[in-house]
Structures are given as C-alpha cells and as structure tokens.
Amino acid sequence: MPRLKILSKEVSLTEKVPRGAMLLDILRTAGHEMYTPCGGQGTCGKCRVYVRDRGYVTSCLFPVMEDMEIVLPEPSEASIMAEQYAHTRQLPADPGPSARLSAHPYGVAVDLGTTSLVFHFVNLMTGALVETRAILNPQAKYGADVISRINYCVLNPQGARILQQEIINTVNAELLRFAGNAGTGKTDVVRICFTGNTTMLHILLGVDPGPIAYVPFTPAFTEEKILRAADLDLECHPGGEVKILPSLSAYIGSDIVAGIASLKPSTAHKNYLFLDLGTNGEMALCTPDRIYCCSSAAGPAFEGANIEHGMGAAEGAIMSYDGPGRFRIIGDTRPTGICGSGLIDLVAWLLAGGRISGDGYMAGDFIIATAAESATGQAICLTPKDVREVQLAKSAVASGINILLSHAGLSADQIDALYLAGGFGNYIRPANAASIGLIPRELCARAMPAGNTSGTGALLSLRSVSFDGILEEILSRMKNLELSDHPDFVMQFAMNMEFHT
Image (tube, rainbow, N blue to C red; front, side, top):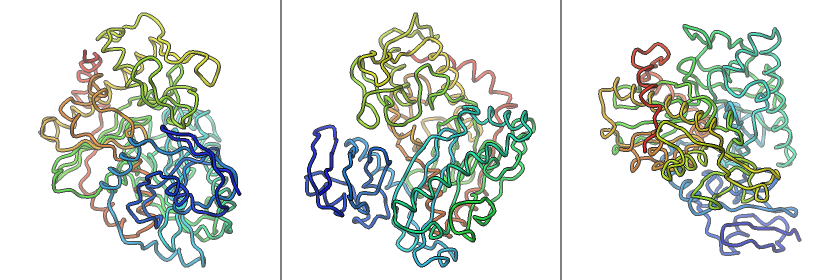
C-alpha cells in the first residue's frame, strides 16, 4: 500500500492508503473538507492539491499509485478558488471536430506567460480537467521581460528561432510527460489552445516580434490563428488543431482578451476594472459600451526579476508577510525568496513602521528571513534598490488606472468591482496594495481575485467552440490607449512615485 504524506496548516500526517484509490476520497475519509462545486466530476478543477515534484492535480480524478507527499490548500486559498469559480463563465462542452481524431481524445490549454507557462490537460470526452501544471518559462535566460526577448531576436539572426525552439521543446516535454502519466498515447492529444501576450505568441509561431518594440508598435498579427500540430512539430496528433487566441494590440494580448471574456456577466458590476499584474501591468476598464485598455511598463519587479531575492510565485516563495518570522511560504517549505504578493506586504509593513519613507528612502537592507531560516543557507533580504523597483512598478500601474478612469469619464468610487487576475492577483492583499499606492483606496472593498483568467480563457476555448463568439463580442468593444505617447502619462507617473503613508 502506498504511503501518503498529507501536509496542511493544521496537521502533518502520513498513512498507508489503498493503491488506486482516488485522492479526493482519501482526503475526505481523513476528515479534510474539499471544495467540489461540480460534484467531483472533474470539470471545475477546484479540488486541486499540490503533489510534491509533480504539480497541481485534480484530486477527484487522481489515483494514488505510489508513495507521495501532498500539500493541501489553506482555507484562504480554498475560498479564493470558490470565489474564482463564482466569477467564471460556464459553457456547454463542445470541443469541435478535432475531438473525433481519437477514441480517447485529450486537449491542452496553455497560458504562455513571460515568466511561467501553465498547462491544463483536459479529457475532451468528459470535459474533466485532469491535471494543471505550472513551470518556469525557459526563455527567461534570454531576458526577464518581453522587451529583452525582442531585443535578443533583433540582435541575433537566429534569435526568434532559438526562442521558439525553447518553447516548443518545453511544450513537447510536457505533452510526453502527460501521456506517460495518463497511460495514453501522444496522438490522443488532438487539440491545443494557446493564450499569451502578443510577443509570446509571435515567438511561438516563429514570427519576428521586432516591430512590437518600436513606434508605432505594429505586431505582425493579432487575429486568431489555426494551425495543425505538425506545423509546429508538436508531440501530439499531427492533424490535431492548434488554436492561437486573438489579441487586440502589441501590448494587449490574448491573455487579456480571453481573460475578460472568461468572466461571467454580472448585472451588479456595470463598470469594473480588470487588472493583470505580471511582467507588464495590463489593465482594462469595462463599461457597458466600451472596454478601455492599456499596458503600463511596470517592469518585472512583481514577478521577482530585478529584486535581490525575488522570484516567481513558485514553491519556496514568501507569498505574504506580517512581520519578522510571520510569513507564509508557497508549498509549506523553507523560503528561497519572495514573490510579488509578499513584496507588497513587506513594503506596506515597512512603510507603516516608518522604515521606508514616503519618498522611498530606506537606510539599509532589511532581513526578511535569516540564513538559518532559508532554504539557501543565505539570508533573504530587501534592499534599498528593491524599494525603488517597487516604486517604479506601482507608479506605472497607478498611472495607467488613472488614465483609464479619465478616458471613461469615471471616478474610482464609480467602479463596481476590481478583478485581480493572474497568480499574483490571487494573493495580493488589497489593503496593502492601496497603502503603497498601487490601486485606489476606494476599490479595496470591491477587489476580488479572479485567478489565472488567461488560462481559464484558454480552457473555455478548448472545451467549447462557442467561446469564439464571446471573444469576438469582447474584441468589438475594446479600445487600446497607448500610454507611451499619452499627454498625461509623464505627469501621472511623476505624481504617483510617492508612497502613501
């Protein structure tokens, strides 16, 4: 019988379990409450748990076949997943004709993030989400942000091809790994849907992204693309459909378009703000008639780059901070660094205690975790340079929000909801984000985590061809505002550099 080690905030226990038993049944028998709005059919993916050395799995579909260690979500994380499910659009299962290419068809929804890649593996016969896996983008060694990667492509004759191959190799490795774990053939994967920022999608297809970085910021394509898997040498059914979801502009990609489209319509939210803080700060102000969009060059600070001990939201990252020795770590392990949500908490705490002044001055390094506490054997600290990086990032985002409000003729107190998208948005504490000036104070009580909406949009597209019509309707209402030549941006940026104290 396999030995299953269960880690949670309350307990840590190891027990022998029947081989082949579903993980959800084991957890319920052990007295753990699991959120399953779909009734354990695997379609919602909200009963997911983290399996050490594997990633997130849907517990109602995951048989325990060998010794393993799992980490249960904390109550706050479970409530976040429940809230996300309540705000996600539900569509009938209709994956389209490619599902007929196999007797046991599977599909993959892929969110191509600048820092991370997220894969959702789906049984197309049942619509069940089998597994979710997030890994670091292997292109990071060529640059932390899209501009760095575009420059690499421009300066190196084979740059675009090299970066494309990095992604293709990684996708193929995940396809083969999934086929091995699921006990199915690689040709049973018959449909793949990709979302991502415009640059990442160009690189995926081997298209020169150079013009995206220079005025007038003209991408080679923004429309939906349909290819066959053989066109990209993907390790799945060669005739399988590969769909690239549509973008709006050079810096409003399909991750934002699909993310907004994934939200369930609400009569209570007439005007709402959609905020996705990753390597760029992409945002949209949605009104009944128009959707005003912009992208601010926030830099990669909130995803860990340019921060002395920064990292993405991966295992070992300090995700929240409440004072010395009082922090939470992703994966319930020893810390290796700090991610964006923890960084905001930390800066807010230091501001409240007077250790950072309103103009961003901090006298010296601040120790977050000692060498004895960390997994690296070195102290994890925040430096004065890190504080400056946070100032630049938060000012860019706040300036973009103010310009969107101005164009829509609205004030912050007229916004009914603030959707915080992305893994970063899941764990932001709105009060702390407001205290450093990242978001308007008026929106604290109206902020809600929306999860990885880019990945959710890719999932909806994978499961249902009816999502295409929703994407078209959203695109028809979108208007892009280019901040780089906006007459108010420089003044807004300067005014928003100060921290709120």
